[in-house]
Image (cartoon, rainbow over all chains, first blue to last red; front, top):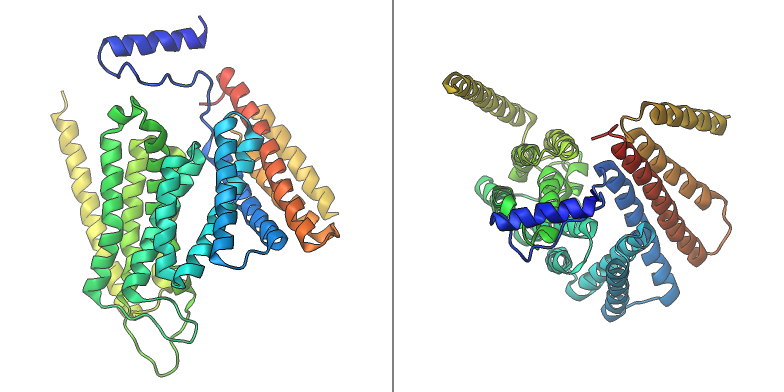
Length: 334
Length: 86
């Protein structure tokens, strides 16, 4: 029996039993399940190619205003869309489209900076652009990257809007404890909830057209939970000492510890999806945030040690509770 | 000498991986390394103006990653068809 005929028979049987809708698009008959590490190689190469393509276009056409960068960005994004839409099976055109898409997004980001002249405003506009691209781009990897960068842009927008932008004149960000906690929760709780809802309702959307958006979006959400906090405060980790005579408290230093929790939630989500590559990535993300917690200035090392002790105690209690629950469930099993 | 050692290691790893038929991860790692190395080599050796360099680099990255992706996926599909990888 041909694979296509067996797939058609299976689809028909599922429709008859009411498990999927009749208008559900048929699944692909050839395997397009690309291993995650090949996607990473292609994604990084596409990103670099996009950067070079933008530099090439910038040198060739010399756009100097927001309008110039906008036109260049829109043209490149439209070209990327065309390549994705016309030939979905060609690896070369996929890569070319990815490079053009990245170059177009970077050009529009520069245009956003030219218009707003603020990091927060730029991040907000980039977030909106990524949200649009998630729905428009007809390619899984492009949708995944859009979701990931939309989450990062959202985190940066809140971070900059609340506590101002980084400055290189030695001034340090000062954040009180409660606003820091609330800020992190405002950024990441909606993403955690969305991830949970998407996994809980995986069966319905997998049997509908929404799977083309929901599947890559879910992966992008998990990736952003794993490393998003680190990406949204990268320069903070590079401030290795306080200026002489200046003492300050910055409770944004707690964000990486909260992000360890988010990474572990992402790890559980990846486990629920049975995605080994994502599980490894989220574990690496959790470790990265522990390192970031050490390097972020804002609390004394003694205070950080005490916080780590408290977190360790809570994790040990949680592990004991989970082990007891597991033993109880095994005991109740017939 | 470094180049010869590098090529030797690449060939050895490739032969071992292709004989094992378990996972293409080492081949993907090699492909990524080769892309980085050849791109760096291009930056070092080609003698174009700025516009030409950026154009060549973008094109090279697209072409080399496409070729790597196609090759790796063909190996993955062949091994999957034989039931060697999940």
